[in-house]
Structure formats: structure tokens, C-alpha cells
Image (tube, rainbow, N blue to C red):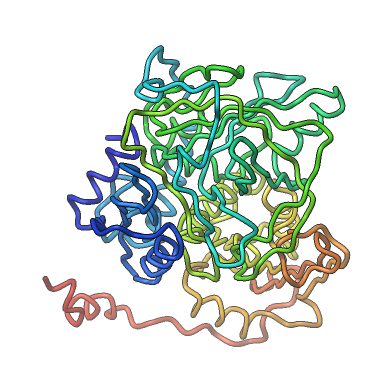
Length: 469
């Protein structure tokens, strides 16, 4: 059964031993981030619920909700010890049900308190710096809702970093590859503000869909329905013409001020480095709707991999790229984009013709995520599991020949957060074809490929103490 909200999912996590409650009073800084980082370093890291925050009476913070494969499996209603590759295939299976349209409801706990005057984010949320040298407190796991000013049917959910600059003012990073950047450009061409709604503390499927690199005209709420197996429930915002997740803990409503940019950052980002300061757009918050106390503030630790960010983004990026590539090339078998937000992406495929791996890599670069993120692309055959790095390295060392199988694309678009980009946003893409040659290409000499003994599978069961249980 899907979880109707974050609270219901936390109950499930606790029942499975995947939630730790911290009842002692903690400081917003450095305690919350330090504990969240620590939880992300544990292979089966739990979610961490802080019940007493100094300076914030009756307010709670939860971290690391998506921060382990156990948590991920429970979110998808799979057995708790489901391995990563099976999690990937379950995401693919569920996303194949896309689209399942959302359901509009008239009432939700989110509307228990409505504030339209004297807005003060610092009084509502126990915000904190995620890393020591961040330019200020950040909302790093909020879901931002916007829509196309010219075509209101195109709405977007995305997770963008939000710097709390004042009691009613946020900085937002709107990189060119983001759908919200398209919406903002169109609004500014019309010299209009762009209405936004920022949902905090969401049903875990909402967060997953918001992080998926879908096509611009694909509605993330429809993907939430696919992941849940039933429609996502949404409710109309109070002051902006947007539909927001009905199960959210709190929603900030406002608008991006047109043609106004100010310094945002630095911020500790997923490559493991601080991004520099940049001029970014600003949001003016006009209203806040929220549940009655206690408010559950969900945030995300981001830093050098692995952190909750990598657990959250890796599988959904892999599954979305697989879905998009398979639509263009049905030979694609699996995609692993787990590393640094897909900076390194491995694709396994069957080959339709000689040189086909290069075409698969080109198709990857044509996807929304491929536009800027993958800078190291490895293409392997369908007998290689891209999630098994031992197999991938074997393919590279025995099937890849640099003089013929290496492609460099200089001066290509890149992530502005890539520390090797110079200038930021420009990089060199590298494609490594580690597939076997097929006719009319020349084969790999006259060598015969070794295969494991047929009886080995029986011995695996006999020798593995876990399986014997």
C-alpha cells in the first residue's frame, strides 16, 4: 500500500527498526547535520528524528529518510533486504505505469493553519546550515511546484536548493537544464513573476518523482501515481494557481521576482565540494500553510558521496534514463547512473550493428539528464551487469581499445557544479565503448570466452551461510 504522507512512512520505518528517535535536545548546528552525515555512512542507515530542537518549541526535524537501500526498499513496499539491482527494476516496473493522473481533494491537514501576514520562515521552520561554510540556512529537500506561463497544463515538480535569506525571501538555483528555468525564462519574457509553491515534508514518492529527470511535458504528479500505484492526492494552494501535495507538512507560497538576481551560496554540493557564490533568482514568500504543531521539517544532508543525496537520486536517475533510452533503443538492458548524480553513467546494451554503442551514448546525451551531467559514459554488452563494477572493469580491460573505442567531446555542456568544469558549465565528455565487436567489425581475435562451471550455481547455495538459513 502507498504511504499517504511522510508520517505514515516514518511509522513503517520505525516498525522495521529503520528510524532512530533523538529525544535529547540538540542544536540546529552542528548536531543535525553531523548526525545525518553519520547515518548516511552506515550501510543500513536509519532515518533520524530529532524531537527537541533548541530554540524551536515542539518542532521536529527528520533526516536521512531515503538514506539507505533498506529505507528505499520499504518505500517501494519490497522486502527490507532487497538488493540494489532489484530496487532498480522495481522502479522501472512501476514507472512503466506512467501516467496515473492525480486526484484533487478539497481538504487536508496542510490547511489547518494558514498564514498570509507577518510571514517569518525562521519562526516556522528550524532551518540550519547543512555544511559549515554554507552561505546561510538551506532547504535542500523541498519540492518546488511551478508551471509553464504559456501552457499552464505543463506543471513541474523539482528539487532545487533554496537558501533562506530573510524571513520571507529565498534564493533558488535555476540552472539552464532545469524545467523551472524554462518556466522562469518564459515568465520573464512576459515580464511577469513566476508563481511557485514549496512543499516540505512529503510522502516519499513525491520526493522521488520530483527528483526524476522527466521530459519537460511529463507531469511529475502522474509519475507519483505510477510509483504509488494509485493517484497522488493534490490540493489547490491558497494564493497561487498551483496544485500542491495534500500530504505535505508545510507549503511556502510565493513567486520568483522577475529579472532580479542576487548572490546565492556557497553551498556544499553532491560532488563533495562547495559551489562558489552565484547570482541566482529570488522568491518572495507570500503565504504559508501548515499542519498544527508539531511541524515535521524534512531536510537533506549533501556532501562527498555517499550521502542521502546519492541514495535518493541514484536509482531514480538510473531508472528514468533506462526508460527514456529504451523508448529510443529497445536493445538497452540496464543503466547505472549512481555516481555523482550521473557524472559517471554505465549502460549495458545489445548491439544492433557494428559501432552501435556509440549511438547509445549519443542517445544518452540527448536525454534531459544527459544534457549536462554524464561526462564519463561507459557502454558494455548485455552480458555485463552495470551495477557490478568488477564486471565493468573486466569489460573495459578486455574489450575496450583506446585508439578506436574512446571518444572525446570537448567544449560540451556540463554541470555548473562540476569542480573540473572550466569555465563552470563547460566540460569534455568522454565515451568508452567496452562492447564486443560485431560484424562487419573485426572480432576479438580467435579467442574463446571462458564460462563458469555449470555446477557453480548449486555450490553457491551450499556454501553461502545466508542462503542456507
